[in-house]
Length: 119
Image (tube, rainbow, N blue to C red; front, side, top):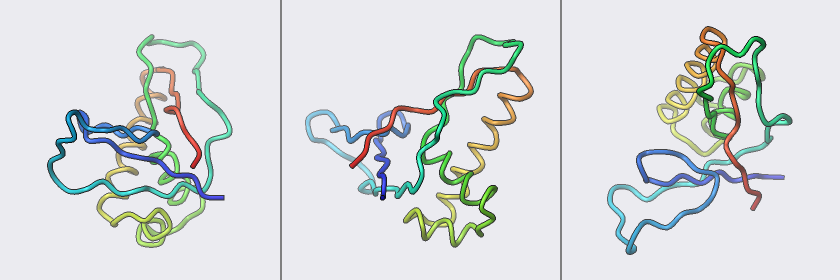
């Protein structure tokens, strides 16, 4: 089963739903689908004691990139091919996910996964 994660250019954030840009205006390159093979089995991670009230949002694409490279041991090229991404785009996802995981561990912040849809 393949899950899809859609990106939107609004403030350069990634969303798990397809969103239209205002008035049909769109600049830059067209957005591509990111292929997600496995959704997270949990919704959030809450450290005890919780030091900071500010939560951290990990996207499904960041989760999948981290899972493929760090857990399954795929190279960035192999993981990029599986997710239909370039190596540099995958590297950015992995770097962002690792930074968020470190922030959760060091600063005691809650980590939650963004909303997801199936297609």
